[in-house]
Image (tube, rainbow, N blue to C red; front, side, top):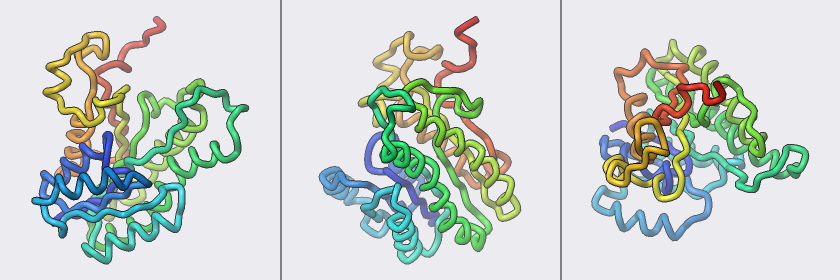
Length: 254
């Protein structure tokens, strides 16, 4: 049985990815930060899957020691890690210029979106090397590969753009060990659509959202990640996959 580790895997996009992994027959270690109410509800909803396939761990991705314990627990319980899904990504919704960020806000963005992935890499890659198999997925944002500026989101964008380079480097360095590393960049998926299905988005319909005529959903992201995790997807590594419905393919300032 393949084992997956996912950060922030209990709600939003992360929940749909976790459901996809469970549907694939994986066991899954799920990190969450503080929402114990959601975890108790999921334990009831997923009761039929079996406790032996689901492992919950409460911890903050910005805390190196907590992420180390998360991986150690996963290894102790399952003996392997096949998929590392770096789904968590702290975000500051207040619109503010870089000069107005506090030191704590800056470091939360960098630690949570970049350094946390490094610490998880460090703990996970030795396990994947022994298996000679691993799939590492990180998240970016629309257009991250081109290193754009992002007004009012500078710290988040800086961390994610750094993660693009880190993902590509890991892909090259670990290819000989059967490990791939890729990035998925979701489009503007907001609110309830994060846990929605593609059928739900089609039924709603809204040509204003994307060129394909509907909003993106959590299922769209889960399907992309499922494909990248496949055993036979090893030729795809170091890639940055835009899942945006075509929003980014035309220069809107022409």
